[in-house]
Amino acid sequence: MENKVTQIVFSPAGTTKKIADAICSNISEYTTVDISKEVGKIEVESSQTVVVAAPVWRGRIPATAKDIEKAGHFGKSVKKKLDDENYSEVNVPGNPDYKNKKAGNGMPPKTSKSCNSCRICAKNCPVQAIPESDPRNTNKSCIGCMRCVAVCPKKARNLGAPVRFIVGMALSSAKKTEKQPETFL
Image 1 (cartoon, one colour):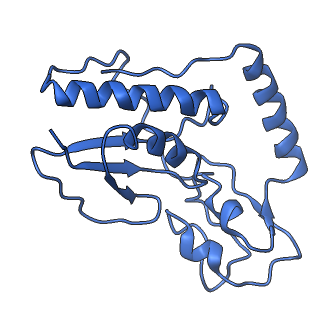
Image 2: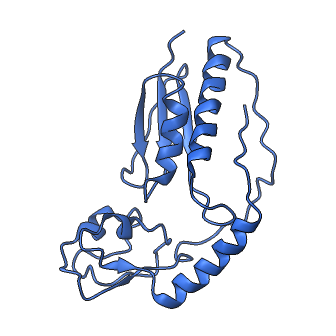
């Protein structure tokens, strides 16, 4: 059975999309909606398979080649389940009453002197935290997704040295206890 697949991702810097691509490419042809770029109503048919992927900012270093390989194997398992028409309920452990965080809890990147005010960062910001009228500034609604850093052609946006140091320390301690990706089928 050939199944239509829609991939819905929030992937400001592109890493989450790599994982979602590895999963979806092993299921079927697919279309992608990146909600960090597009906002609006997403319509899917009831018979359609939807893969939703979002980044984990804390507790896990972004995707490695091994993670992408595991995602590909997961995609094959999903395809088998779909081919077998095994539509059992998926149980995901955890607490659904997670802490509701307000926008503005991110680490806004700083703008360096090399910024030429091209506004590419402002046009690509998923939460419109960078005003097009003043792209050198970032307002309090920044979620720290780093899309502006990823799209800046001048590499003019980055985290300041103190923040990079703190993040580096946190990530180096996270590397000591490597967490494995979890999948639920």
